[in-house]
Image (cartoon, rainbow, N blue to C red; front, side):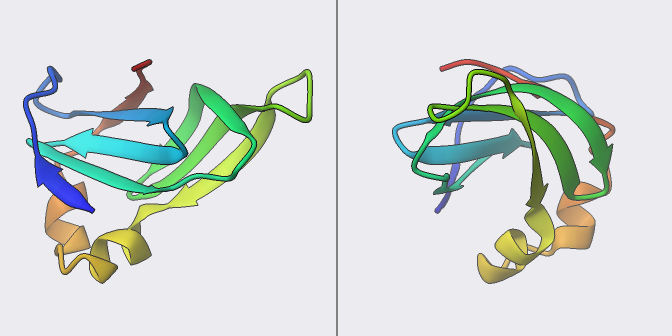
Length: 99
């Protein structure tokens, strides 16, 4: 699901968050939500951003310590008929925000 919103970000910064069983990625006025793993509690940190590919630390209910998780946004954007190259090009950083 993609929708327009008014989340505060810098010009080249995207936001990653989780809640209600979904992961949300926000940038450029778009709020893209997709199903998260059932045991995800929240994202802790973005370890690496590489043009649509995220390496993050995620806290899961079944583990006391955060685990490394991988998110590839390109197929998600393509499935929403959003041109991934144009959408991702201006993003320089991604930060975790809490709902």
